[in-house]
Length: 392
Image 1 (cartoon, rainbow, N blue to C red):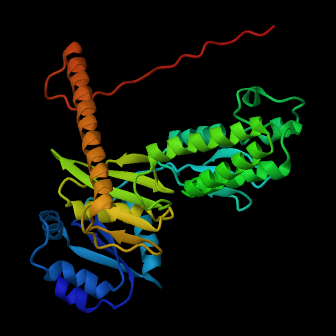
Image 2 (image 1 turned 30 degrees about the horizontal axis):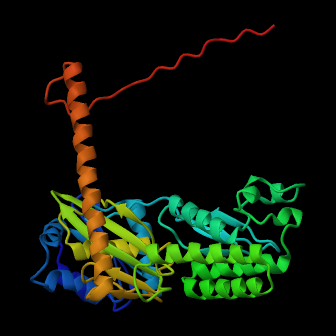
Image 3 (image 1 turned 180 degrees about the vertical axis):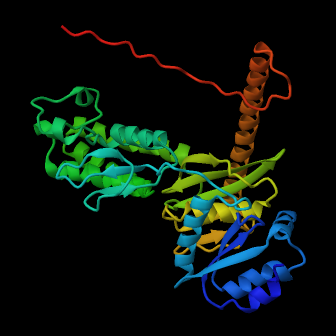
């Protein structure tokens, strides 16, 4: 019989990872700790454990531990174990796709582009964004305002005349010398300030250039600066989500409904809401919102750099290096969390509708095939025939 008190007494006060095992040696739960003895003993000393934890502890017949050099190293090892073992009582978030970034290359005439994967230090990256559509929308906006090139280098190097984007005023055609390097660099600087949330600075700079051009009777040039400033003002009025402009933050909320759980992540970059993304974890049906959010923070930010501010919809026992995690919120930031919670609620409704539709299709298929109601599984086989080809 497993004696938790005797086991805990032999644990060191060191960081590491613990694995709780079931009767067949199957992993039930994997966790990390800054102090293994304190963390593991808390499971058997607390009287107010959640029903999920109590059920898990009833099945534990053994615990294995691995000591690490630091709590950060324990976090990495914990995530590797969770991915490889998929323990029954760990809340699992699956997100195999890396997040996209908006990129400004390091060329003499930089290019706007979409980037996913390893980042090259020669280029500047802004983001991450929740999905590719958010990046493309930002690129289109920057094209309208700053008219930076988006063409690949192979196309750029072989142009003999401006392309259609120049004709519709979405590019200044540096490929054919239609703009000086100095003027193009100013547009690149404006785009970077915009992506950093400093639109007031950009609008002030454009208005000043407009007045200078108008005073010199370069009215066509002045009208271009005017149009740029107006376009940015419209974006500013439509997209800013708080008065503290320029802030980078993630907003995370958890909602539950009829056994389904959804975590919604809202991304704020440069003071603008750039989009959101919903996650549906596994093994979370008996977990509390705090447990789900803690699991999300641990798994999501292991491979994604956290922004300076992370707002959560419930109190969590989790810390992020270099980032402030806030739960007790007031004012506008509370509205952000409520927005994320509403997104999660809508995602749950859509998920339930899709599940209902799928179940109805399965029932219809079962009736069409004349299968009994007790049928739980249908296996399908596709036989592929290859006909011989004749050659002369």
